[in-house]
Image (cartoon, rainbow, N blue to C red):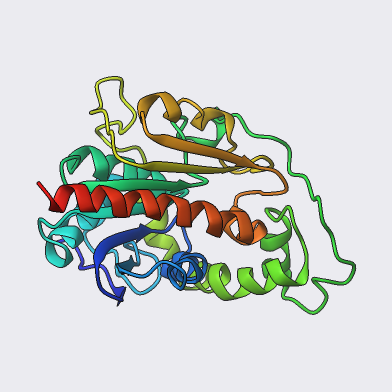
Length: 274
């Protein structure tokens, strides 16, 4: 039996499922999205931990297919057949596209934050060299070596604000992850049904795709084709932003998410009026 995803359930209104990336946990999504929902009421936010990450166990989960099945079961248990929106970050964006394909008639809108693109494996991705655009002398002094190296290896903007968000939203999930379970899942990482296959269903709802120009983890070039796949997609490639775009460009990120949620609300109104 697949595990029930441990989660946080906040607010009321249109359900919104937020799927975090590989290794962190729900705190990554709560940290960047809750400031947005302080400006946009009327949403019930569901923040689950994926199996083997955060507080969700991974017993019986051996592949990304199993992870996706656990997410789909979570939707059934918490949302049912109600229309909902989904946000996916990194690996969560890969899962979100697959969930959308499975529930195309139920999903109101899709937002992708630095998503893993059609090139799943790191060696197949088109990525830039890591570049630090903002640095602060002495910023990492006193941090454990592993934490400092983890932040510095990915951060494009290295200042007190981004470090504080990283320590609050990202590092706790890295510390909590079940590494043995994740290694087991990583060995069968590709979904059996490619969410980006040529015959995948066309989704005409509101889509927002946010990419970091300096993202050395998943890049941005491989994701440009999503604009053609989603006829109502907005795409932004933000400069001075790496794989943690949501904390390195928090202002533009929040503005773009507000814009997307406005379109989702309109879509929900159209569905309700049918």
